Every structure is written in structure tokens, then in C-alpha cells.
Image (tube, each protein chain N blue to C red):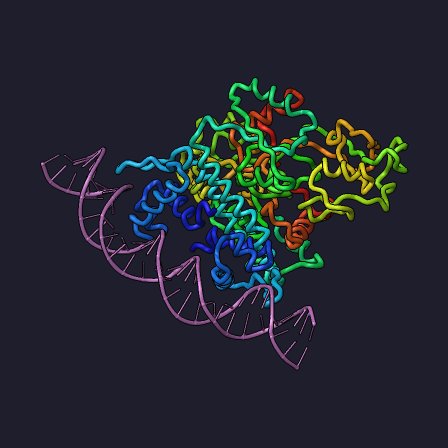
Length: 287
Length: 287
DNA sequence: CTGCATCGATAACCTGGAGGCATGGTTGAA
DNA sequence: TTCAACCATGCCTCCAGGTTATCGATGCAG
């Protein structure tokens, strides 16, 4: 009746990520033949080939692509189940809030203050995540709530409420041709060098790779690129740089997000406190 | 790194459902000592007791309750991943539509006709599910789309579009005190006997248990109870029964639902066809 | 109070299959 | 041709997870 063990799914995901049995085996801390055999075993059990492999190349079949997509989610769900079970025993557990350093638009202290007045407030642990995996903290239960930016972060599998909407600005060195403009449009940025964000494959930038806002601002200061960001992420504006509003960029929203399956009052009251009396304090809608 | 194998999770769910190691072992087709050991193993690995057990009684701890809740979802996700992978290989695969017998409000033939004109239409397999588990067909990938009733079916983890909204009627024998009324309110039903739906624990009814609409209508005919249903579920009205609109019952909606993680064009075009030109034909929103 | 039936835990044993190591086969590049 | 990279195969070991038999606790009938 069991179709696929968690461990096997992890093996598959590793190979699907690396597209290389040797590297995947290292990442999994097992020997390569064991991995080859495991994948063949899985393929036999499912009755579908997952990879097309030659001795020079490994690639996913359509079935493999589907399994990668859904399998990731399944692994997250298992992790979340385990984490939730572990924590459910402890009614004193802290609330874990994940955010990007500086990614709170100045709202964090206010939110924490509001939350501290909730009758069932817990201590709050702030987690700073790596550049691109904040959302996974929420999906697999490593954090309870998080501050995310839409449309940068992928909200798949998460519920959210908008805290703050803001327009976006282009950041240029003060000597730049756009520095004097009152506003620009996206089309004005044609031909400019934009950053590639580290760990974000689908980016449209062509310039140097940057890992965070500070790095990006530095690169802009030395005229290696320009960048577009929500306004609050560049407050205060460093010397030598100028912000110009971009009128036709889709507005950016700072949202408070949590796992859509998580209905604990713990989360609901934090959300209520964060939204404040701006909105109803009832349990927020999810869908 | 692996926290919990799929098989172990299945074992746990079985015991959590049965609250009885012997019966759970039978259901899993293993011996009872193996199951006891497996559960102890899991508890040791998670570091949390999942059950409080004496030789006469088994019950869930809070951690166990959490694991049951999230673990179900995780198992569904694994099943869905496997099913999707198996089917992804076959571009000819039929579209599988799940519904309750008679639960289409007369819309099915129209929907199928509209879908057949879609450029990428596939053959459609109609699945009739048991009474209460239609939604699980969608969650674990046994079906692609389903016709559900809100607020009867649990839409957790599913995306949906409303096909049809209708008011609800109370069905009474023709001799009943309410049979002559043009309309009633919920408060008029005070003191009446309502059905308990088989497999639906949270029901408010106190009367005999019924498994489907036909059974319920029969019980009403013999004056054992009365019932409240969406109007289309009792068309045509059997002889000897009378339908009276209930003005203040929350309206019932027939919705077309699918797994929220399923973004295949296959599903999108069926949804588009079912909605017809009543709405935009773009990919429907999910959240 | 005393057997009895129920049910989970323990003990002792067995086995299939997962994983390790060594090696083979294929393929593209120099 | 030779080499290097890389996945597959064969063989062996070992233990996780299964089995049966039995024990110990607990509620119940008489």
C-alpha cells in the first residue's frame, strides 16, 4: 500500500535538483551506487521512468518533473507535520517570526508592541533566513509567521494578509541620467544593467550577482548597475544615491504570511495584533 | 535527516483513527507487536509521546492530535505526488471528474458538452465516490476535478469556482405541520428530528443515521424525520413529500473544485469550459 | 474475591532488502 | 587511442522491521 517512502522521495529530489548522481549522493551522504539503485527501484515501483540518463547527461522526464514539483510539497508537509507534533507538546513554545534583515519596512517594532498586549502573547523568536528560502520556513514549520514581499516571494501554500502597500523606486547613482527625473516608467530602464539576485534563477537582470540589498546599493554606488526596489527597503537613502519613483511597476506589498494549514490561535492572534484595528480582529480569511 | 517514513506515518494514522492497536494492526495487515514497536520507535525519534495508553484505553496526546491532523495532509500529498508522476507520462490520460450520484444539479451534461468543444478536450471519466470522501479524491490525486457542495464539503486544500448558488428547502411529509407554509425560517424547525449523516461526525442532527439522499427521503416519507437540502438535490420531488424554502439558511453553492496545487492546463480548460462565457475564460484565481 | 477475557508490551528469532565496495561499460574530449 | 567522467552491475554484509509466543495489567461477571 505504501507507494513511496519519505527517504526515497528525498533521494529523488536530490537527484532531480543536481541532475548528477555523484553530487546528489554526496549531498545525501550515501554512496553513488546505492543512489542509482534507489532511483531504479522507485521507477520500477511507480512504473514510470523519472530520468533520461546517459553516462554524460541526466535529465527529467515529464513524470520526473511532476514528481519533483509535488514531491517537494509532500516533503514539506511531512516536515511540517513532525515539527508541529514536536511543538504541540509545549504550550509555552515561542512564536517564531521569520523575515529578511531590514525587510520589515519599519513596522516590526510596532507589530511586536501590539502583539505583546494580546492576552495570549508568547515570547517571539525572530529568525533571519537566507536570501531566498524564507517561504520554506513557513511551509515546513520552521517558523510560524513571516514578513514577505509580494510579488517577490512565492506565496504558494501560504495564507497571508497585506500589511502595507508601497510603490517601487529605481535607485541610481546621483550622477545618473535618470537622477533628476521626478518619475520614470519601466520602459525608461531599457538597456540598464539590473542585478541578478543570488539564489533566484528566474531573474531578469543581467549584471553582477548580489545577495542582499546592501550589496546591491554598493554596486549601484560604484555605477555597476541600477536597481528597482520597494521604497522602504532603501530608507534611509545612502549618500550618493537617488531614488526615483517608478510609476508603472506593479506595486509591492509587504504581507504577513503563515502556513495555510496552520489554524492555531497562536498564529491568529499574532495576525490580529499585526493588523491592529485597521481591520476586523476576527480570524483572517484564508482563501 | 529523515524524520518520519511514509510507512510509519500510515501506521500512526491507523492507530490514531482506531485508538486500538489490535484493530489498527489488522487494518494494516501486520501483527500487533510490530505496530506497538513502530509507534514506540516514532515516539522515540520525535521525542514526544503520541498516545497515552493503558491496557484498557488508548488516547491521543496533543502532539498526537497535531501529527494526525498534519500527517493526513502529508500522506495525501505523497499520494498525489505519486499519482501525478504516474499520469504525467501519458498525455492522453482521461480527465477524471468525481461527483456524488445525482449531485450535479442537472448541470453535468451541459458542462460535458461545453468541455467537448475545448480544443484540448480529453475523454472524461466520471467517478462516483462514497458518501463523504469525494474531497479526498481531489486531495490525493485520484480525480482531477469534482463537483462539491459548499458548505457541506470541506474545501481545505482545494481551489474552486462556484457554478451555481441555490437556496435550501426543508423536505417534509405532505401531512406535516409545515407542509402548507410558503416559506419557513430555521427557528421554525426547532424540535424537529434531523438526520445524522453517515461518516460526518460534526452533524447537528439527532435522528436516524442516513447514508445518502435517497435513504433520507425514505425516512422522511415514513415521518421519521425531516431534512434540509439544496433544492436541486430533491428534484423531482417524490410523491408524498413537500419542499418549503428556508429563508435564512446559508445558501448552498455547487462548486467545481480541484487540488489547489494542480495547475495543469488540463484542469484549467475544464474549469473554463464549465464556467462557460459567464466569466472570463482565463486561468481561474485560486486564492 | 476470584477467575476470565481483553489488550498492549516484551522477548527471541528470522529475513528481505538497503547500502557499501569494487568494478564494468559507455561516452565525449583531447 | 587514451583518458576522464559518470552511471550501472555484482556481490556481500547487516540491521530494520517483521513474525510467533508469552507476559502483565486491568476491568468485569458471578
